[in-house]
Image 1: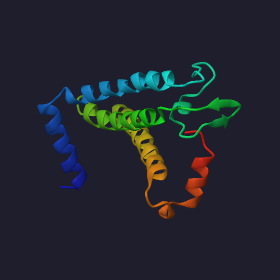
Image 2: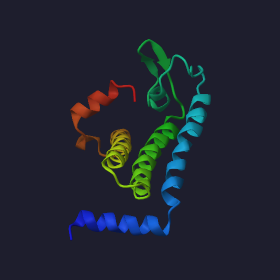
Image 3: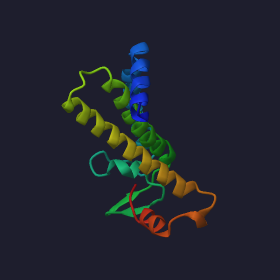
Length: 152
């Protein structure tokens, strides 16, 4: 039996035994909204829900970005929330898919949701690795430069 089929079977057995875990994992993604408000409330200059973009809340450096001043003192909270959102999207999709009629449409839909979550989580892991790497000489200089000039 292929390894992927073994994993799929184990996931199916798990979701049959614990059918509410997938929905609960997806519900955990609501933490994103709570931490978004916490990070926005910490801004001294006032976060504008109309003018600022959501990634400003996770920006690690204070300064002018696209014509607006950005300084997010709780960027670690927001970036951790982005990471958790990615994990809950990916894991929730894997677990919930087992509960649906397994059609091509449900496979594509849940796969895209899992992919989006995985890419989000992967981006945040790379960002944390860059920002908090105790061995900065091991980092890719091009990636390092692009992160310094980007609004996360």
